[in-house]
Length: 328
Ligand code: DGY
Image 1: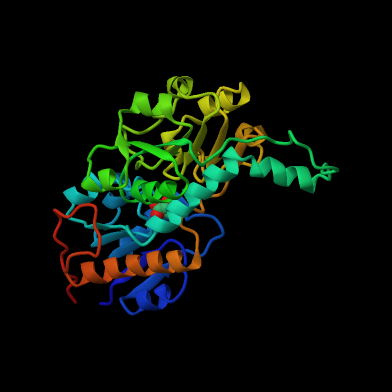
Image 2: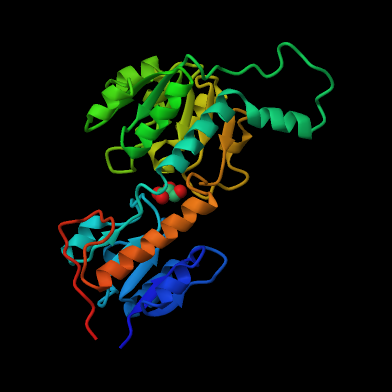
């Protein structure tokens, strides 16, 4: 019997054709993300799931998935997946690191510049026909060059951001659970979180969302930051307490925010965050270039192919699980 692969969103490029070579495809083609009841129903017949970061893979779903051999997330982040629950059932979980590192680092830098230099307000100013003359004091922002950049989480993406910062003559400080000699080579100073908050002119969140990092940017973190600071988030929205962020921006206790990710996500158009002129929000575009999304899509196919053959995945978050080959 051919394998069945549940695909929760049509991937770009030839990934779909490659998946079809691996088994029968059950593709969700609805306009919105696959609803929970559909996921619960369809997972029952699936040998593999090609999932998106919006699909919650938890005990309830796994209990409804007696045939499941592999979870392959088309993302580097995997906070949507209960990895321990997959491991307990011997199910390998694949993700797509490395191929998106540089693109996401570009996004972080773009957001930092756009938010700190008030590009959003500038665009609105022109669009609303307010631009009548050149003004020496129009929309002053904060410099990037020569400023202190605080990177929270010095993994692959944090490191790629630090490389860019060198070209802007920034001082870079960072927090990390693990340090590699690369940090020293890049001239990055390790600091603890309170010091990072106090010293940074711009802060980029590059840690994964976990129980420890959930709401690490809360009211007390904002109080510890410079009132002129820019906060950039390219990680997951849940690392920031959105209500506290709105208050900090509204009360002028934070300079600006450049956000690729939000909580909730998607952010409704009438959310109070969007009423803050100094909030520059884009819809989770961190890795969104054709080249990178094609690479991610194919990476996630490679992970399914490997698992079905009982080989090690190209990248897994639970390497202790040995894939069981599909028989039949
Ligand atoms: C990821 O891969 O986790 C990113 O958030 C996608 O842009």
